[in-house]
Image (cartoon, rainbow over all chains, first blue to last red; front, side):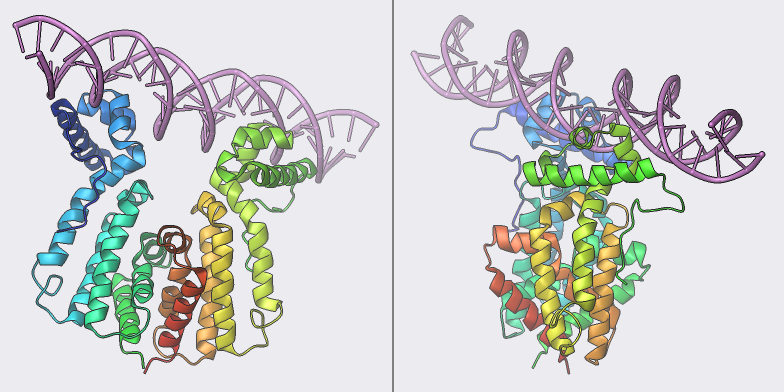
Length: 197
Length: 197
DNA sequence: AATAGAAACGGACCACGGTCCGGTTATGGC
DNA sequence: GCCATAACCGGACCGTGGTCCGTTTCTATT
């Protein structure tokens, strides 16, 4: 059961037209993002492409950030499924250390791939917390399986922090660090944390 | 010599009126931020308070983010001075490990104190890079003095990542973690990294 | 099937960040 | 001290995110 990021999902009784419009808006946003790139997608255009008024878009998604968070949500959900029940070493079945390293590499690449979208989603609605929370929970469980001693929740945060978008972007775009070196450095960090005296 | 974040400083020959206006704008921004809070400070208002036109503000500081970065710059500079030549343990004179821990605690509190301003400054101009770069350099030097083996520049990044504003805010505001526990966790992380086998 | 009322709709409207260009003012050479 | 020139100034203007409210559409009830 993935921690999902319900922003504007079925409340007790969502009217049929509302549901149709929500889908239309998300599909329109997807299409426009794909066609123009995120920062060229304007709310007016999304509304027009979806065939609804601008007011409708804002009522359903609150803000531009909220809409982007909802778009982001889809891929996050399928990634969470891969982590929880996909093939090893990312999914269950591999030794905890292998899973942890696979998790870091996977999250790192996903964060870079969706960097623009994640930035556009900002701290909107629950995205930030729900996604962070899922990752933190997963790392905590793996650290526990590895019998790490100490303040496990805080160590999980420390391991996740270098995977955040701005930090990765700083390294990749400004400092021109190759991805392999970032991966290796993270692996090294994990080992130091796990194998501490 | 602190790494300063010159955004709109004296180029070869800055005209006297331009310099006066720059100071007036910065002072006005300071006053308004203090009086209204950052997100209530509008560019129109800054211009009016400084007694200049809006165009002038944007020519000198490029954008709202740029202005905020320039405001932030002042306190950053004095903090950098404290790190480089202030009293120990933050400044020189204490053992490297003490300095490293003091650095972390100090940076942590400063980031939380200026969280809004740092967010408003965004990745504007050089702020992000210059500030990060200074911190990274300092940590690298201390790790080197501690004779840490491995990829020191990358380890420095890993130690700095948990001190970033969004991550601290997540813990303090959402998870209600007391600052002391965050400090202790960072100390623990540092020790694991430094004393790795 | 008719009706009442709530929920959703949509586009005119607003606010604020950012641009542009005609007018003004400082500065260096004479 | 005066002039030519470059730099600077300022406020009218624009685009886009976000709001508001009169109108329309759905659904539960009878």
